[in-house]
Length: 190
Image 1 (cartoon, rainbow, N blue to C red):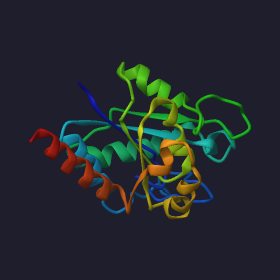
Image 2: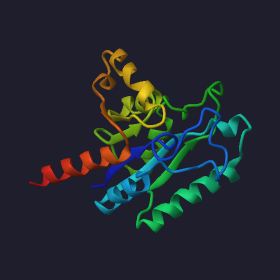
Image 3: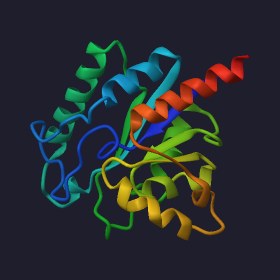
Image 4: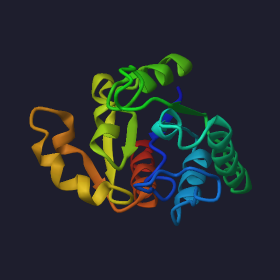
């Protein structure tokens, strides 16, 4: 069975910007994030990215720019002995009414379809409520990191009454999440 982990991109893997990450030069990995993904991959996990990229819909950058950023990411992972199972993105703006922009579940629907599996219990790691809300329909395991917008998002988790998000796990960064996931995997083996 496929062991899957779903990651948001900006604020989880790379530095985020309120002005959007628009070019390969602005795409800067967070400390330890590439190594964290490599550790997951080497432990047998399939790691996929689900990311809103409304900068495309807003005309701030184009698909070639996005592809260059993702080529940089996959190159850094290859250098670390890892690869992604896929990158799923929404290019639409918040007013476009699409079904793929998180918190809508469209990106996760696509991931479930691509891998032909239920996402129930799959770790979904993000730095915003919309990242985690996207996984509610699939009963993903919501995990918030304090990097990116995560520190500002953390106090809002308690407001999520009657949802799985109220009890989301919170970690300082992706490396800490991976430490936890790998320790949990080892415990499950015993």
